[in-house]
Amino acid sequence: MKNRLRVLRAERGWSQADLAVRLEVSRQSVNAIETGRFDPSLPLAFKLARLFDRSIEAIFLEDSLPGIQEPG
Amino acid sequence: MALCNRQLSPLQRRTTQLFGANLALTATLTVAAREFYKQTHPAFVTVYLLATLLTLPVIGVIVVVGRYLTRETDEFVRMLVVQALLWGIGVTFTVDTFLNGLFAFPDIYRLIPILNLDLFCVTCGVALRVQLWRNR
Image (cartoon, helix red, strand yellow):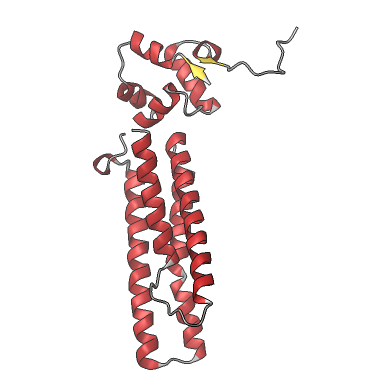
């Protein structure tokens, strides 16, 4: 799953370590999420959303999945 | 909270210490039991009791790891630890099965007395180190 974490973090001038402290996770976790190697759980995604004052959808971009259509 | 030896969380430090203590207990109990068997030729009941005693560090490691996994709040680190544990289980089963097959042949003496728990712990440690290096 792609995300805008690196951009949002850079806008605030935070290092990965700074963000890790705010999220109470390891720096490796932040790095893994940023690079898309690890998708965070819902509680951590909500924590990120609260921290950046954005919705989860504004931070995480769903990969286009074949066979799944938009509702309506 | 970088995952270097110097900067482990209190939970990680405590778990590492307990893990090491269980390994040391395994080595001590194994050596002591071997010497005891050699020197005293104990009765069957004593042998069974000693064999049961040797399982204590194994149970200890499972308890330590279980306690850690339930208390670790960093889900990414928890995932790395689970992956390392799977590596440990996989390597231990594979080597154990290989050695059992090898030692079933009567002409091959048990040259390398490998302890499953040692192999498991070392493999887990190496796998976790590799995972942390890959995700540095």
